[in-house]
Length: 322
Image (cartoon, rainbow, N blue to C red; front, side, top):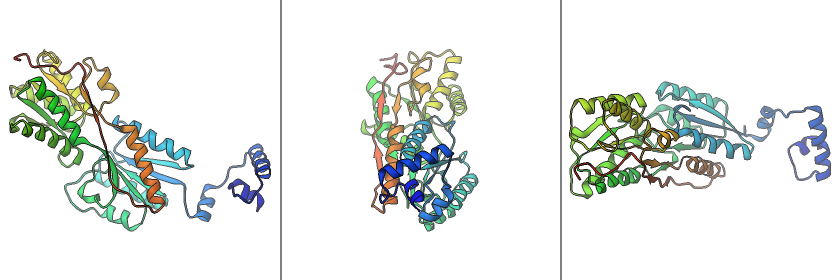
């Protein structure tokens, strides 16, 4: 019993005794059975972390922040990828529930439907849940952390308008995704503030990858619209757009200004460093962990929005006509 208490850092064992027992355990190569400890304590010391994919650079630092805090607190993290597929997301969440994780962090797969059975199951399980990013209607019952995408997109569009750009094209993201909707709304609001309507002919559905940016840019070029600047829903789309425009003989920003969103590493080190929005990726992960600990303690939590920052680099300038 004394050995058991010492290895669990119970306070009723003398510090010198506890140190001797731990030293002997280390020499013997003894590793406690975490499953047995979980049965005794009613906790597993496991968190589930569900994201679209680690290949998306936006999630790299967020995952790092969650894992670092979890490690310091004695938790392990089970990382799962949804690949933005609804069926895979459901399978991931059910596996985590079967492992009796102490909490789940999830970047939701967005749906048009306002209800999803898996999120009702998650709520019924009483498992603490923290959303990473904008909540979709199907999971709005959970609290989460997100960047202020609307305000950041507004600031980026305002930057182009102040440079003198009259016609700004927008490469939009996936229609069901709330983060994409908020970024588009920021673009629209900046136009409305200066008394202009958004020209629907300047809005192109691009998706979220480099290939999506290439395809949207090809459509943009073929339609010969007279835009002098392009706002992209994220940096990957912006890079795809830039590659296609450069292949077509256009110079950035001499012929066309370009703005991304996210400030991934590639944005700063692209051949034309991108003007973009710096998302607080590491701070989002830290804030998510703070919220999770509050939920575990039974405290009341509220949704959090963290401000983003516009970074002006070489890809934007006043239009040539100005």
